Structure formats: structure tokens, C-alpha cells
Image (cartoon, rainbow, N blue to C red):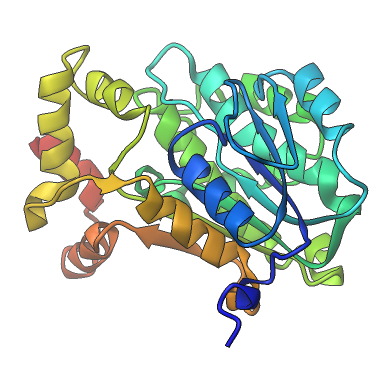
Length: 296
């Protein structure tokens, strides 16, 4: 058996963001090993032997457009892995980079995506409970332009039922999960059998780890790490994953190994979110993530 061949990436054009570090770097290295023509983008320098590396701020429309103009006419797989942590006060920047740009990039690439292409996105277990906002974001999910997304933010930024003022990062990941669920049966995707999925990582050691810790601890990294442990890992005396433990599954999800899978937000968190699901079944009306946060 040709083990590398079953992934289906050899000679294929693959677009990936965030390749300079973390989960995306691990995914990029694996894609190169599997024979893909990798077109990578990041704000920071990409030190990998990709087909083409581009530096861009994906929070700026002009940078995104300039980068997309350099990409090949046919794209076989898209991996959206860029993002920032965010504290209250920078919600627009967080939502723009973590979600609006993702939706915009995919919309811009739709005409280039090949038959049976895949779109795979890094979400987060921090997007848990996305179903609650799904009915309220249909207009945003229908947006195709950068301007429409910004207009949506201005209209909804003070609506706490949608935009959590304490966690713009969490809101951005809930929106990704809503987007995946919405687009898997979208006529544009179905017409060419384009698959769309996300992985939702648990706590993982990356360049953003200290940012997450400081954010969760009000500026105190040590206290924040303890708070995060209490919320996400205390129920199983857990530990942080390594970046490859997320980057590798992401590649599998976007590969031909998963050629009949679409519309899935896959939790890669050692069962954390499943334990919240079962807790919610046993305690109807209680949001287990909010309960865990309140108990920390």
C-alpha cells in the first residue's frame, strides 16, 4: 500500500495560512512530506521549503487581496490556520483576523477550488456552545465581502447574545463552527462536492500559549495557566497537547482519507468537550463551559 498516496496530496495545490509556527507549521511540514505544492502565508517569516511563501497581515483586506492574486488558478485544498488571542477591547481585530478573513478568503477562492476540494479550519474548544448563536448569525454567514463583515460587526458588537464582551476569541471560534455547519450544504460547495470541516483543539503548546495564560489570569501568566487547567483539564488531570497533535489531524481531515466527511467540528481535546456534552445531558439548562469558568 502507498501510505503517502492515500492522503491524495501528491502534486496538488494546497493553500495554508499561519505556517511560520505552531499547528500550521506542523501541518505544512507534513503536507510537504506528502508531496503537495504548498502555497503558504503568514505575517512572520516562513522558514520551510514550500512552493511559495508570502508575508501578509490577514487582518488587512489589501494584504489578503494581494496575496490571493499570487495563488494558482486551481486550488485543491485550503487550510485556514491563522489567528490571534484576544482580550476585551480589541474585538474587531480578533473577529476580523480569526473569522472574517477566513470567510472572505474562502469566498475569494471558490472559483479556483477544484472538484472535491477541501476546506479545513482550525477552530477551538473555546467555540463550544456555538449552536446558541447560530440562529442569530445567518446574515453574517451569507456575507461574501470584507465590507459586509465589518458592517455586521458594527451592527452587532454590543449584542452580548452574539458577541461575548469577555471573550472575542471564543466568539470568533463559535463563528467558525457556525460557518462550517452552514456551508457544508451550501449550493456553491455541493455543486463541486467541496468538503468543509474544522478541528477544535484543546489547550496546546504554541507561540500563543503565554498570551492565553496572561489573558486568563488578568495579566498573570501563572495564575492564568492555573485557571485554564481548572476549566479544561482538571476533570482528567490533563496536560497541554503539542502542536503536531493538532497539525497532523488537520491534514488528515483535509485529505482524501476523509473524502466523505463534511460539516464536522471535530474536538481534539482528550474528551473535554464530550464531558461537557454529557454534563449538559445530565443537567439540562446548565452551560457546562460557563459553569466551569464560574467555578475556577
